[in-house]
Image 1 (cartoon, rainbow, N blue to C red):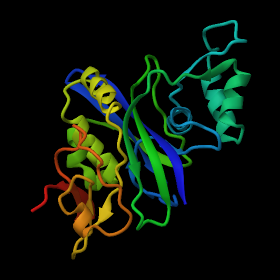
Image 2 (image 1 turned 135 degrees about the horizontal axis):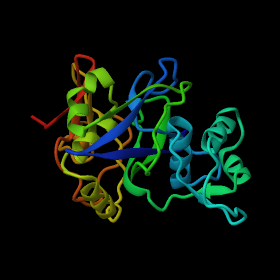
Image 3 (image 1 turned 120 degrees about the vertical axis):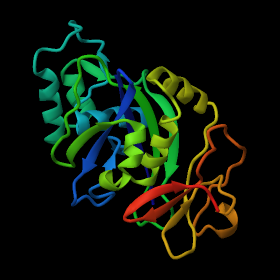
Length: 260
């Protein structure tokens, strides 16, 4: 069974450009244990991908993408109210209901679609995950939940690639950092995201035979001929389907490489 999921690529401006936000999953997690990932997770029943992404961002990082509800008279939150809402959610109150009690509702207009990844069929636990990019809202600071996640880090895309082993980056995060590194600022990233949204196509890696673990992306020349497992071949060539087309596991870290 493939579950619907969503993740947020959260960016913040720096003097040199921008950084991307990761949370490290608990070592006891059933999926991607100890890996640094973008805040995200499975969608609730009846929840669309943007709402799931906003909810997961709030639950895992404390960053709230919300707007005044129709029945709310004030356009500002009381001091500490945001933390109280989050604690209610982490204690089991449904997220949308917790926001409604505070006179708020999710606001997903700022989310820009970036990519759509489907877990390879060789994995027991599989997700169809939509990734969205957004800039960190003003006056908000992320804080990991210390339950599902145990650490957080801001890092430039280039540094994230260099630290892939230390951060234990999964393939979607590693590839996304490579893509982000092609842009100098957040404005350029958001513009690229809007262009990518016009060329949607799922990315389902396939395992390649060999002595070292290797995953092939749909634009790799060996994807259809040598790949193992379910496939989602390109039905056309999106502009973003360029660059390194395979992941190789070396020294306990995924590395992006070109075919030889």
